[in-house]
Amino acid sequence: DNIMVDLHGTNMRIRELAAIIIPDHRTIQINPWDRSSVQPIMKAILSANIGLTPVSQGPLIRCIVPEMSGERRQELAKIAKNMAEEARVGVRSVRRDSMELLKKAKKEGIVTEDELKKFEKEIQKLTDEVIDRIAVLLEAKEKDLTKV
Image 1 (cartoon, one colour):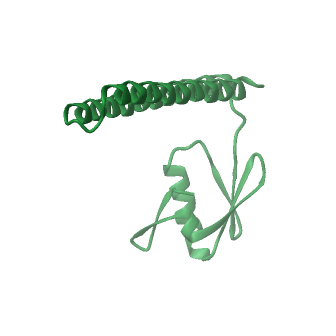
Image 2 (cartoon, rainbow, N blue to C red; image 1 turned 30 degrees about the vertical axis):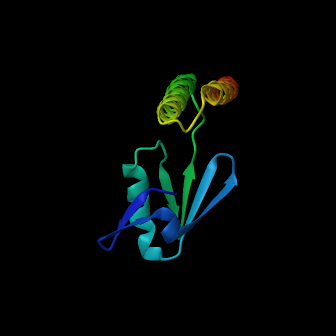
Image 3 (tube, rainbow, N blue to C red; image 1 turned 90 degrees about the vertical axis):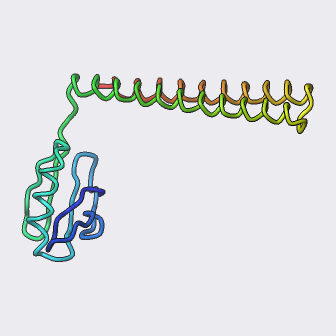
C-alpha cells in the first residue's frame, strides 16, 4: 500500500487511490476509486519490482502472491538475521550512550558511586532482556520461514 503511483503528474500512494482488500492469503485485490487510475496503478506495481504481476479485471486489479520457494525463504531468513543484528547493535549503542551519560553525571556529582553501579546494572539487565527478546523473535521468524 506504500507503492507510489504517478497519476496526472502527482505521486500518490496506492492506498490513497484505491481500496486494498485481501480476500485470501494469496490474493491482493485493489479497487481504484477512479477508473482512470487502473493502468497507472498496474504500472507502479510492476515497476516496484516486488514479485507481483497485476491483472486488470474491469475496474479491479488482482495480484496473486506466488508461493515462496526454498531459495526465497532462505533469502528472507538472511534478511531477518541482518535486521536482528542491526537491532542488537542499536540496543548496544543505546546502552553505551546511557553509560556515558551516567559517567558524566557521576563526574558532575549528580549521581553517587553506589547509584552509578546500581544504574549500570539496571541498564545491563534491560539490554540483556531486549537482546534475548530479539533472539526469540528471530528464532520464531526463522521457524515460520522454514515451515513448508
